[in-house]
Length: 464
Length: 33
Image (tube, rainbow over all chains, first blue to last red; front, side, top):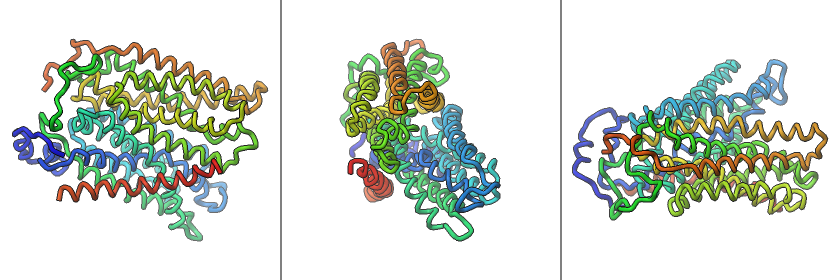
């Protein structure tokens, strides 16, 4: 990949500092910018493990009893909160440490994320060894959760700076890893638990230690490989359009200003509504398909359905974010909301017609747009607020994810329960939920419609 | 050397990703059997 380097890069390289220091990560002249998505993937593939944490749920309730839970074993309800704690701290740390990630640079941020996430497993292992649940919460939930948040945002602004011509594709490639991480972690966890299993140990402790070390090393490879572009770098032959699109700015907005603008909150609403619609379904996918097609879908087939949705979720992150480079961010979200409304509205009909393949395809497309929503938002932020603080702004916007993480499952679970308690057959208990999802997507559509360029008064004085 | 590092890094992230996707795909295809 040919690149253009102003002379300033040599000076920047010469500034000495620690190995993790931002000044030590300026790319050499022969650096291939497509190394950065691989480095970002090394981090995101690891932290995506959080979606497969449920693999450990049952084994963690049998640490003492081994084959079945003993009276002193932890309850499944208590274990279930570990995932929620990790996601909560993902949102909090992304919002709190976003500015630090921007100033420290991607290498230091990725390394800290590796230490937190890998360390979270190791501290969690101490909790398992001592059978102290609070240590497990502190380890995987709090420390690991911080690793998730810092790791999630750490490569975003670097990717956007390396790919000013294709920011959607670049961030989509990295964030795809977060969707794909569970696909590696689930079979890996099962393999490790089997490997460390003995007559007195169900293997969870060994698996936690092994995963902590493995993930630390894997994420560190990403940290070592990542580089920032020299000041003023741009892809060879690429020039910013003289007539930029209406919603794309070349100015920059400071993170402390950005979150006070209407545009930030419209984007918050867009992300929250898009995620709420997808996350509720994702959490209930297995029982939902079994109940809608009563007697026709076995638990094993339902698990296959969940796996297929994960694939669509991952693929959608790359596909839709790449598409957004051509049709624009706003139009991409219009597609998500309009197509999403049409598909959710068709689900009750597809269920009553008993057409499983079309039902699966409809939810596959819905989940691809759920993933696409995550992957396209960094580029949307870059379009509106510029590149200077995009990582920090992205971190604050991820609070919408935390809100959706509560709202989505609550809506799906409680409405279903209310319907069943009111005497509605299980097969039809999801119909109202689907129409509510349509209403949420309509709110997201309106938020997207209201997005206008950020007023020049909010632009940063120094745009260098 | 830079080229080698580039290919090695993509191999390091690509192999586990392909392994995970193939495992999921194997399981997912059972739905249509």
